[in-house]
Each structure stands twice: as structure tokens, then as C-alpha cells.
Length: 137
View (tube, rainbow, N blue to C red):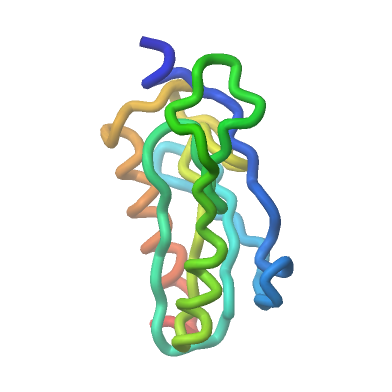
């Protein structure tokens, strides 16, 4: 059961600068006080995509089987930054963030993955954050 709900290391692999992308480190908070960390990639464009990540053991930059304290879910890495590079080349700003209990974001009220019950607050926080910035209103 821990495989699906326990917090496991989900390192942030690399940086947008590895792909020659301009970016800002950003932080924002959910309504239940989870401190969320992310990147605003290719800032200043008129089109914005908010990139979240899937389930457990993942971060804004992807997933790796390295360093797992239990059996990894997949054998190969899944990297998101190449997708961000493509989106930036198409003229998008990308808000890529770590959900609570993942990557560099803090825990929520419970240090578990709740499969949407609490994580939905992270999505709302990301939308609230991007729309609070004047250049994206």
C-alpha cells in the first residue's frame, strides 16, 4: 500500500537552463497551506500552459527509477523538459510545478498522496497563481 500513497523521493531532474530555456523559480501556496514550488518557463508569452505531473514518485521535471526505497513503477526515466522546450518554441509560457509531497514542494496537511482529494487544491493554486500575475490576466 505504501507504494501508492507514501511519500518517496521524487527528485527534480535537471533545469530548464539545460535546454536553453529562460525561466523563473516560483513558489505559491494552496488553500490548505501546502507550499508549492515550480518553474515559470519562457515567461512573458500570451499563451500559458500549466503542466502538472502524474501520481506518485514524480516531479515537475519527470520521473526516475533511481534512488527508490521500494520497487520502481517503471524501468525507464520519463522526462518532461523536452516537452517544455517544444511548447516554448511554439510560443507558450509553461508553469511546471511539483504537487505537494513531490519534488521541492512541501507536504500538505497529510504527508501522503491522496489521489486527488488534496492535490486538487494544488491545481487550483497553480491557476490562481498564474492569473494573479498581471501579464497573464
